[in-house]
Length: 115
Image 1 (tube, one colour):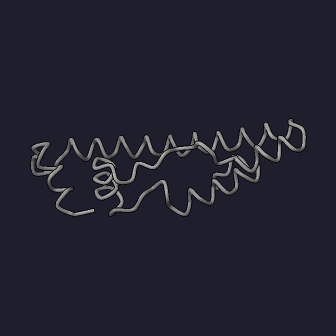
Image 2 (image 1 turned 30 degrees about the vertical axis):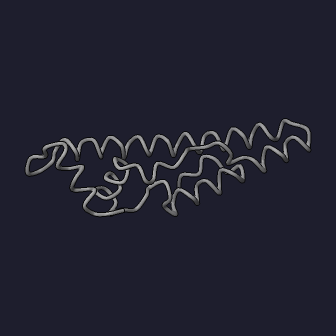
Image 3 (image 1 turned 180 degrees about the horizontal axis):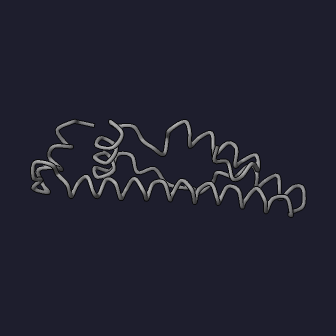
C-alpha cells in the first residue's frame, strides 16, 4: 500500500500535532482486535469440545472444518491499514505468530492456551 495513503487519511481528519484522536482510535481498534482473537479461540475450542460428543464421522468433519467461517481479513481497508501502520509498523496483529500458535493449540483441544 502506498505510504501517501496513510498521510492522506491523516490529513482528512485534520490532525493536530499529536493526532491524539487518531491514536485513541487506534488503541480502541487494538483492544477490539484482541477481543476478536479471544472470541476466535473460544469458537475453535467450543467446536473441538462439541466434536467429542458427536458420532465419529460428524466429529471428524467438524474438526476438519474447525477454522471455517472465522474472522474475515480486514487487510486492504484504508482505516485498518492506517491502524497497522501506526500501531505495528505495518504488521497485522491477526497474523502474528503468537496468535497462530494459540489457534493451533485450541484446534488440539488445549484451551485455554494462554502461556
